Image (tube, rainbow, N blue to C red):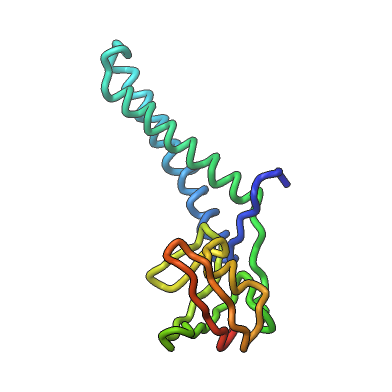
Length: 156
């Protein structure tokens, strides 16, 4: 593996990246090559907007391919969920000690974050604070918005 940072993904996340990579290599890349050939056929490349647009698109596609390939080279698949302590892949029910509110979060790698579905990054302040703690632990979270305490009610 490269010396790059590990990318934590579920198997579904790996499958989605592989699907995106296949789409880029087998659909987008050939489309861009055709667009480049057609733009070249139009003549003078120095004043050819179609050619410039195709070159820009080619750079974007190739950059995205390289980005996904690098992620896949450095991926660590989140295998089984551990319910003994908080870890990547776990769903955690937390109670905010100050206001008695509860929330359930799933801790995932940064590439699978989805705040609308309560999927938070393992690099977020709350995940870093609760990582490796157990049910019943009260943990202080230091965030850009200040410090607060949460109690771990459930790990699944």
